[in-house]
Amino acid sequence: MYALIVALALLSCFLGFVLEITQSNILHVRNGRPPNAGAALFPNIPFVPLTYVLGAWGHNQLQPDLGPKAASAYALVSIGIRCWQVVRARAEFRSLMASPPESSPENVS
Image 1 (cartoon, one colour):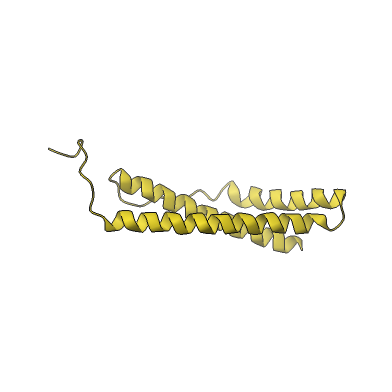
Image 2 (spheres, helix red, strand yellow):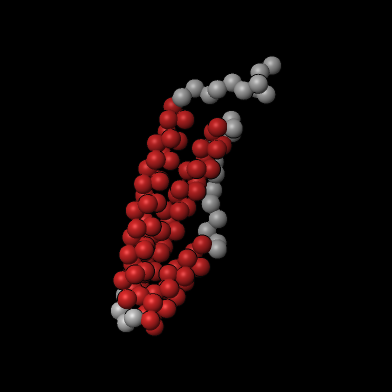
């Protein structure tokens, strides 16, 4: 069961990376820069799954079999919210890329 929690935590991290990169690229395009943002994998990869597992373990100490269910439910809600945010951010990014660049006062000669 804990392996499932780690897998869900890693999926949540991956969606977070996609969202971070997309939102950063939106800012890049708005500021007239090429969309070439990246994301830092550390410290999210070791700490987010560890937090999920420790949270599940802690809940198990309070109520047997509650921990994995609570952590999995939280992960699924988090993944659903991030998916929705990624879809919205990608749509905004595509619309920015499709529209002609605005001329800012700094770029006008």
